[in-house]
Length: 209
Image (tube, rainbow, N blue to C red):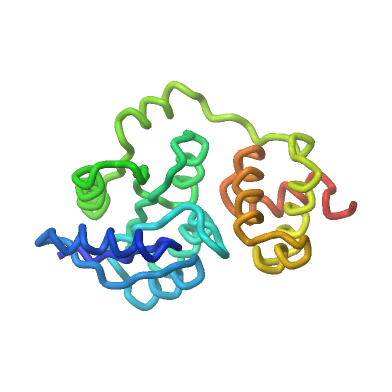
């Protein structure tokens, strides 16, 4: 039996995933989380075989949560679930310790196959997305100058240790807006974790502004 932790910030998505997994004799949903912090905590407590992890969520992103889960539950295999088909996001996910990457518009059969394959110790990326990874070489870290003024402000606050919720309050925007800025920053700078963001901000002198 493959024990699975479902992580997505939308309850209806979690319910749909649970129904899908419950139909399979060898798959068992053992817990659900709606944000990165709870995902890390449940992974530590439950030690699931597979963590089905959304990329964009409140609090720590799925990529940041993946890196923490790899520390708290080393035996758990992480399968990222995302709307993003940009190879940059896929590379970020694998750099953080993911074993697979599946798009949210994938067929049910593909998702089930991906879960079984990562649980068996394999890596999984849809063949078409894998072909794009090969065709588009990895880029070097992008310059901070590519960020908008608001993105630079968000990056500075992230590097100073503020949460998405704290940044949203300071900038008088929604948490979702902060999450969108963060995703754009990660994409533009071509980094995958908060630690890399902090290092990038320090190296470029952004914290001294």
